[in-house]
Structures are given as C-alpha cells and as structure tokens.
Length: 326
Image (tube, rainbow, N blue to C red; front, side, top):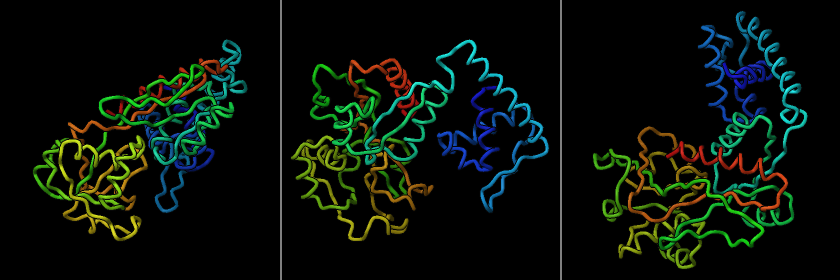
C-alpha cells in the first residue's frame, strides 16, 4: 500500500470532495479516484460513499475506522522521514518553479505534471507559472523561475532549438505528433493513422482561410501548428481543401462537424475541436504517419541554477510522462 494513496485518502476526507482533493494536492481528478480505489480494493471495503447530486463524498462506517489508522500511519511516516532523512522533511521541501506556455498545454497535461511530481518527488514543492513564451524567457533570464517548458517545432528535418547562450541548457522532454479528428463514419478511418495521400482530397475546417494559413507558413513560425499542418501538404505539392468556419468556435455543435474534418493538435489545449464535442464517441483521432511536423517540448534552465539537481529529476519524470503517451 503506497503512502501517497493514504495521504490522498486524508485529503478526500478533509475536503469531502474528490475534485477539491485533486485541486488541493494538486493532481488530476483521475489520479485521486485511482488512488482511493486502490486502497479500497486492497482492503476490500468501501471507504467513501459518492453522492452524484452534489459531487460530495462521505466516509462510510468502515471508512471512519480506516481513517483513524491512516492518520496514524501517515503521521508515523512523516516522523520517520524527519528522523532519518532531514532533507525530505515536509517543512524543508525543495522549492522549484517552472513556467509553461498556457496556449500550448491544456489543463489535463498540467495536472499530470503536478501528479508526476507529487508521486515521484514528494520532497519537491513544484509551482507552475502559466504564461506565454516571451514572458517565460524574461522570467528565466531574471531568475524569477528555475526552468521553462518550451515548445518548438521541426522544420525541414531539423529541430529548431531555442537560441540559447552558453549559460543555458535545453533538455529534450518529448514530442507530440500532429493529428486530425474526423466525424465521418467511414471504414477508412478505423485505423489510428493514415498518410497525407489518404486525406489529400478531404476538406479541413479552420478559423482562418487558406491564404492566411499559407502566409503563416511562409513566416516559418515553429509554434503555429495549423500552418505546419498545411505546410506539410504544400511541401508535397498538394493544395489542401480548406473551409473557413463562419461561426464562433465555442458555438460549434457535433452536428456542425458532420461530414467534415477538423484539425487538432492533440495533447494540448490548442485545438479547433470545442470542449463541448471533444469527447464525443463518434469523433476519431488519426495520426498522420508521414507528416514531418510535430511539437517538441524542451525544459530550458540555467546551468548554474542552485536547484539543478531538482530540475534534472523533474526533467526525467516529464520524459517518462511523455513516453507513456506514445
């Protein structure tokens, strides 16, 4: 039985909510539910009663008895850490801050980063600063943060590494391929991948027209995933069929997607697929096997940062997180 699971039981009992416990830890909602279930399954009891109406939870009779022992075990564990491992003392956690571009990582991915740190590095108190790329560079230069998680793109078979002087280091964390999502019910899309040739005659929906996408591509911006997607067609001499959406994205319904394709950079919040329809079972995500453009995530930090050991530990955890998503 993992001590982290027991600590989660404590937090759920304190907040009387799985969601509030996830925010307080912080970690993802799914992590909290899995940890609670792991303890319940191991003990063969139900610790909490779930109330769907108000989304609160209450301790069962068995849960109240369990919580008394959980409190003792966690308290003894914390006392043990203080005695045999002073640096892991909760009161002397290593503090570390990382900036993240809020336009390129969604709330789920950010929650997963917190979760990985919480589980693998309980002695590190991680703070994530959600900002834009320019602000991240400024904060890093002024020592306001320890590291910046930057997203760059591949162009012409080469990785565009951020321009850094000798005082900085960039550690590759992982990559995310470009994908698209379709609502068309067709046997062709039963697989999880395809090629550009397979989709060259299909229609794609964007918030801008093709000419604007072409202009963005010509500017060679590594952050514009839409332009990168269109550029992959253009590099192969294919003129993609693009339709501009004339209604606000947040007003799009599942019916609006019928018989249409929609581009999505999966794994981030940067997607043309609205939240209201993103989880529809009929939507299919396909990875394009021969598309050369994908986002790459680097952790950038100063080589002389006194927190270098913690930064490198977090970098390894982030690499594991990205490898699990492949």
